[in-house]
Amino acid sequence: MSTSTPVSESGGRRLRADAERNRARVLNAARELFAERGANVSMDEVARHAEVGVGTLYRHFPTKEAMVVAASQQRFGEILTYYRTVCRESAEPLEALQMLLTRVGEVEARDRGFASVVGGTLGSEGPPSTMRADLEAELVDLVGKGQASGAIRTDIAGADILALTCGLTSIVHRRSGDWRRYIDIVLDGLRSRHTLP
Image (cartoon, rainbow, N blue to C red; front, side):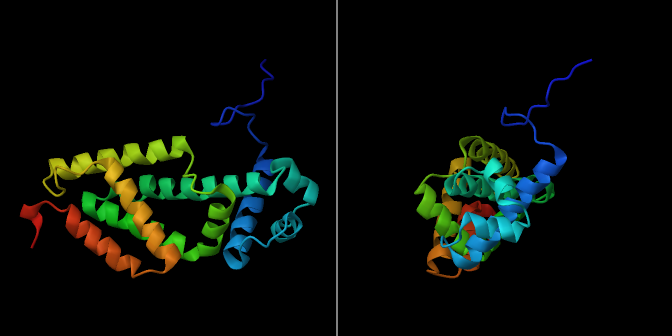
């Protein structure tokens, strides 16, 4: 009989169910507190808000930076999961893209304080490369479907859509315009000429 420890997707040892729940509670608490108050949140405050012991928090995240990185990864992973489970089911590629961009705008607007903490901690570092590659692969597929159906211009690439999400998050964070209008303008610009009204 095998007694090996299960391995997680990241290659490390998989956490027990209770440890995984505690880790998720810490990350959710951190995101909530950072969104409300910015960077001036201590590890002890996160532990109290998550209703776990400080030792439990430090076992998962030895530094505040490690916690911010993990929380950022969690948020990006949630957006990717939303795309795969909700948006991808849409028959219309542009509708799927509108749903994705709207979700990104809503998450960024809700988490402005957290986004500021991520920027202050990680600088301009983007989402983890594997997750970014996964999302880009999804967007390449989406653009391909849209081009095959004649809905999306043939000169658009999946990487272009990632760049457009960066513009969206910048508008949300800087409050430099109506991000929902930005999405409308972007979608109009992606449409093939023969699909325009």
